[in-house]
Amino acid sequence: MRIVHVITRLILGGAQENTLLTVEGLQKRHGDDVILITGPAEGPEGDLFERARRGGLKVEVMPELVRAIRPGTDLRAYKRLRESFQKLKPEVVHTHSSKAGIVGRAAAWKERVPAVVHTIHGLPFGPSERPVKNKLYVGLERWAARRCHSIVSVCDSMTEQALAAGVGSPSQYQTVYSGMEVDSFLNPARTRAEVRAELGLEPHHVAFATVARLFERKGHEDILAVAPEVLRQNPQVKFVWIGSGILRERLEFEAERLGIRSSIIFTGLVPPERIPELLNACDVVVHPSLREGLARVLPQGLLCGRPGISYDVDGAREVIITDQTGILLKPRDFPGLQRAIGQLASSADLRERLGAEGRRRFAKQFRAETMVDELRSLYERLLADRHIHTGPAQ
Image (cartoon, rainbow, N blue to C red; front, side):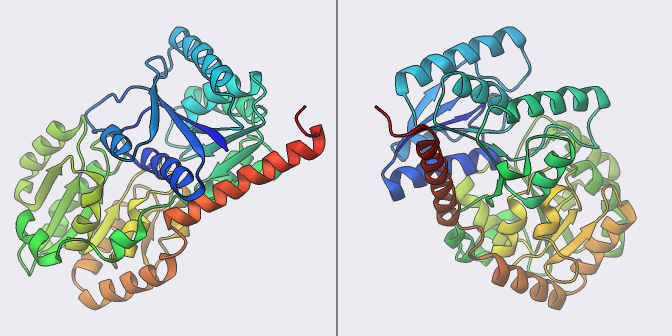
């Protein structure tokens, strides 16, 4: 097949890693001719362009395809995408995340691409957003849903929330869990002891990993809110914050003000291939984000045998099950967050039991190969259906 994937930014992030693994898998497993169209990598998060280059992937950078809403620039992106689709003549256009999904679907639909697919990695509207923004994005997503043949959700919760908002019809949706290179998490390349020593973790420390951009609503401020009391009760706790972003300076200043800076390890940017060894070096994943599709770090931690603590937002409940694979909390439940960290910090047996169950449950479900094959089957079904209804091409 000739397939075009469209995304606004190829930064280090869950949606971007999902997209890159999909493109790699379609090209290598199925021999498809795949082109990835992306906007420029903006911000301090790092990017995946080097990995794409090493993998021999076809990547077209479109400067007009930006994440922020800019009507004039967005119109130019729409026109550029139409030109690309006219030239490439893809059988499938697959868009990712909200902005690329709105502009990309509109362009693909106008060019009568046989199969137009969109993936929801995380909805742009929800209870943590302002009402005006919610109204705008719900309207745009409803409009865009009428301009595609299928909508892929990375978890069932995304489908439920989108349908509740009147976005699309039930027949359009299919859940395809976000794939990852599972074997690297089941068997990290470097030993736990070696990586812990590099991080400055002693054998008696209990390390809680958070993998996320240092950005609003990712939960770092919530951890800071409970950390002083957690550390008062158990000084052996350490927090390992993996990632970077615009809030790093503010978060470091707040940690200093609270007198807990020595208990927080900021790793800064790390390449994606280091995530398995870092999670394996820690003991628990704590991810109190207020908005996600399904945070990849939760199943990644479980694959390493590390239980998770998460707020009950979006798809988290599909992998973090209280007393089975971790502890699920109501959003912004600070007393609950403090108790959960304390409970897991004080019991190695509990950590072992929850982590082992998560590893057993999810080793197959989150394989990149599973994701790629399910998406490829979806494309085949959509094209077969178009063939049935329109007849063979003349």
